[in-house]
Structure formats: C-alpha cells, structure tokens
Image (cartoon, rainbow, N blue to C red; front, top):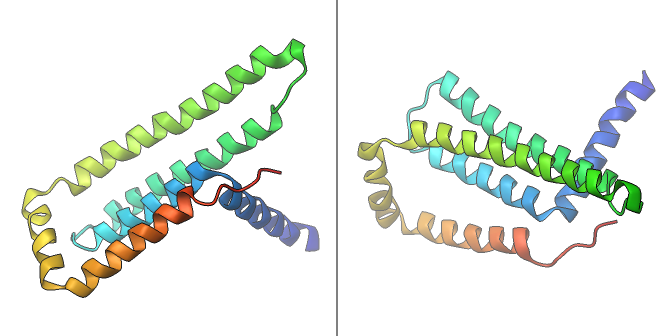
Length: 152
C-alpha cells in the first residue's frame, strides 16, 4: 500500500519539476487560471464547466507528456538523432493540436457578445478588481518568463 501512495509523491515531484523548468507549462497553467476567472462572468452549466476543465487538464497533461518525451530523447547518439527529433516534434504537435481544439471550445463557450460587452464596464465599476487583474497579469508574466530555470 505504501508503494501505491508513493506513486502520488513521485507524480507530484514530476509535476513540480515541470512547473519549475518548463516555460510552456507555466504559460498553460496561467492561461487555464484566466479562463476559469473569465468563466465567472458567464452562467455556464455543469457540463460546460466539465468541458472547460477537460480542455485545461488535457492541455496541461499533454504539455507534461511533451516535456517527458523531450527529456527522454535529449542528446541521443548520432544514429538516433533523426528519430529523436521526430519524436519531439510529434509530441509538440500533439500539444498544438489539442490546444487548438481547446481554443475552439473556448470560442464556442465564451463567444456571447451580450456577456462580453458587460465585462469592461464591470471592471470600470470595480477598479479594485481591475487593479488586481493588472497585478496578477504582471505576476503571471514573471511566473512564465522570468527568471529562466535550469533544466536538470
């Protein structure tokens, strides 16, 4: 039983390593958080929220798989260089394909002009929220892009 629960610890360690070292994962985590924040302006059903969570989780999961594949084929011997490059490109392509599909789902769910038009006015009426959003965006930028972390 201990080995079973130890697996969760290894998974958490791997996730944390990826957060520290993978810029694209940090970007997707922030994007997912802002999507969920934007969803508060909408009256989504439970099924629509489930779809949002699946899309966000799918992009993050594929980004983790992509990072794992990139690490596993890093610096191959010359005989396997071409295959390693292909594997890395295909894994990145999987993230791209799912991200495009997730963006399309987001477009379908969030494209409600009557709701979109109310969001700027809400922030004007709630300047504290606009300030918090600006601060969080600056924090997200630093979280994603600075400082560069060492891959190990």
